[in-house]
Image (cartoon, rainbow, N blue to C red; front, side):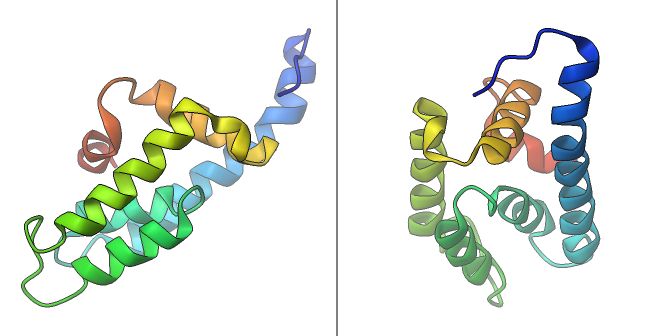
Length: 120
């Protein structure tokens, strides 16, 4: 990832990327806020940028009637594994997505996506 020496240079390059992330988070919240399992659906939507297949599978599971963490355990595990691998090596993502992913991880350091669900 590029290194920026001035605040102005940093804002010029990261500002649009983070604005895009915040808009995506807002869209995910608005789409899912009134659904059953909304916290999980919002989280999987937010993180779908980084793990699209796993997020789609998790979303599909939680959209089923009577869905619980027990019924969706396999999808939860695969989703968490994908995010964990990216946390270990975010260079697998595009530069813009690295910025978004690292921002979210710094935001919720050591609390993971489940804690983010409660705060969104």
